Image (cartoon, rainbow, N blue to C red; front, side, top):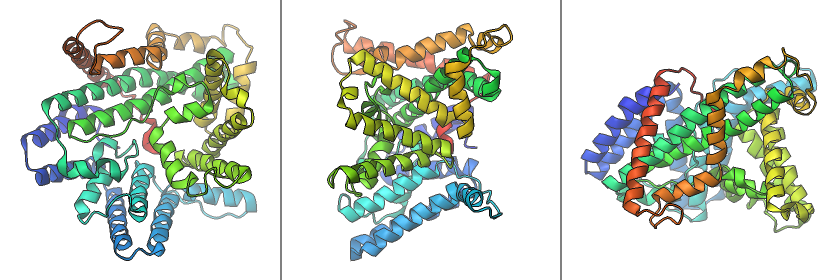
Length: 471
């Protein structure tokens, strides 16, 4: 495992940030960040850090060859090797198991430990080579800079997926003044609060319900578990994205936003414009459009979308539950295209339809097997046992703190979050009639209190899973 949260917050991050701020030489700053990033990864993955080093070197060399010789062979080799490495480490066991099930063979199933964050750093490396081929960015002659881009610790293990074009210039010419560092710390604190207070609370409830098994729960418990997981996965991942964006800002890097209030979406199409933006845009630019997008007729468009959502689901893990989740979303997108009325529903009705579909999809995503997912969905709509024994689990879960965090999750996923965003913008707020300086002071004070609360919670609990570490 990577650094424990408290070691990262209380030792690693302060030391790296202070040294980066004190040192003014750009080469030394980059060397410091590179060393810190490799240490960060090697602490939990002492062997697989060499895999990441080799991946960076391979893609660095391929980009140079593409720039020099402009042969498509190098691009094909880059795609084949990157996808091949991902397939071996992430999907080998899944593929062999399915071959055995289909053919009756007894091939030994490889048990290869999954390198943390391999999907993220592989996609980043691949996008770099493809962008060099497309002429959208020049190949980097300095291997250390390519390695820094791929291994940079704020977004290394759980995204967002950063493209080289986004930070190429900032590797050499970034600035990180006190105001920007403070802004980054504030954004980091918000993400930490999302993760520690909301996601962890929701996650404990979801684990309790899904772990009990569908036969042991009634409809109320099933809906509590489904809603808890709906909130956990959003606040876990958006919280990490906020922390990564904030960390990047502290060191002078600007990452793109990864979420845009996805639970306010009024259609599945709208949801995917707002959810995991770095991944959906990656598949759009590097898979969907190269396959032909929507330029080669309706039939080809349908096939292209099915392929993209199959891969989107598979990207999340080597399980048919992830694949079905991706295809479920792809099917809903195709349905919305075929029935435009679904995209023109009254706002409240469209919002309800989208949230219901997303919630049901995440039940499949969370389940260990498809049969468990089907059984769980059945309990959500047919678990009518409300006897005293059946109500033990729901009553145990509905604690005052859980209800408070659930209320905060609902509010912060929508309207409230849009209003609080204005605390940190550059204009006078139409909601809070105070000046920018006062709003900044309030926001920094609240962020400090939030960070202290989170550290106290972390110190008193051993439950702190990051869902997207395994992707």
